[in-house]
Image (cartoon, rainbow, N blue to C red; front, side, top):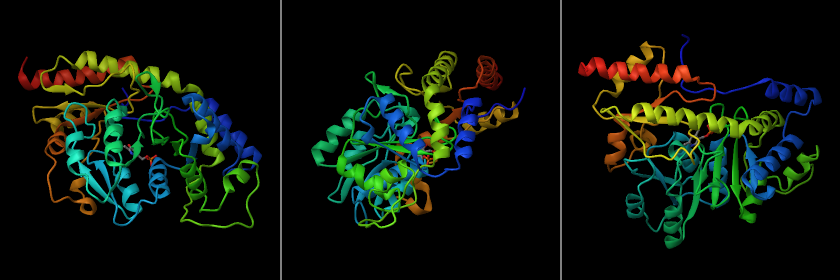
Length: 377
Ligand SMILES: Cc1ncc(COP(=O)(O)O)c(C=O)c1O
């Protein structure tokens, strides 16, 4: 058997032809394809097309959202330590301080009690992360945000196609940022999107993705560009290209099919692994969640040994994530006990659209085999 990949893109003839068609038109940068992708994302979620702004990465989406709120030096943003370093880099890129928070042991979502205890007069925003595509507790984040007058930037990098209370992610909330990098629930090669109904913020972000050039997006959608313009705010080179949007548009057509397969894989893993004594599963609802990653907790102190065993069997696994408050740039002078415990237990199993049932069974059997041998069952 070939090596079983932890994650990968799933690309068909449709994406290849769509890219060729953009190449044939010889208009590769930001233009009509991007506008159409934004319109189609809006339709998919059920929101106005003005609420969707596509950019070149999920990290850029987070950075633009924060910068568009004028979050900068002297400000603090609350964020779980257990996230990809992208969340942290987006905050520190504005000059603001990421303030590391602990997470729940049950689902790795930011711990609301720890979060509230870390609010200070400098706190401007909360960046909850939809860890493993889960956002069940987001309404409680908004309750806290209203109480303390804070903005919310949801790091929904994992959550495209997910629902909460049967409503698509992106339908409600302050600012929601998706990632469309190569291994996410859909991809545009690299890419991301900011979803917000705040019209002032929309305009700031739309301009800021194109170096702050005012109203350049609208011109580029029409194959034109601004030759005379004003710039009022710091901008970045963060726009999405037509090549990326062409891939994204084809992936969007497949999104529900991709989601169903990911959910089925997660349900199969859950059913097979829930009986194992040394493994605890996260408390997640795979009717609502389209899992970008499938994380288990190995509770008998043998995570690294199991990881090595699976690799020997040709199975790639991952660790999402090493805590950010351990990193030199973001080191905290306090500990986060649950995050620190979880960081030694979490292991991510293969999860992607093309993973076959027999490959899922092979992974499950390899895990069972490891524990059977270890405990001589
Ligand atoms: C939790 C989280 N936040 C942010 C990002 C950044 O997204 P991107 O890779 O598109 O910049 C990722 C993706 O890797 C992620 O997993």
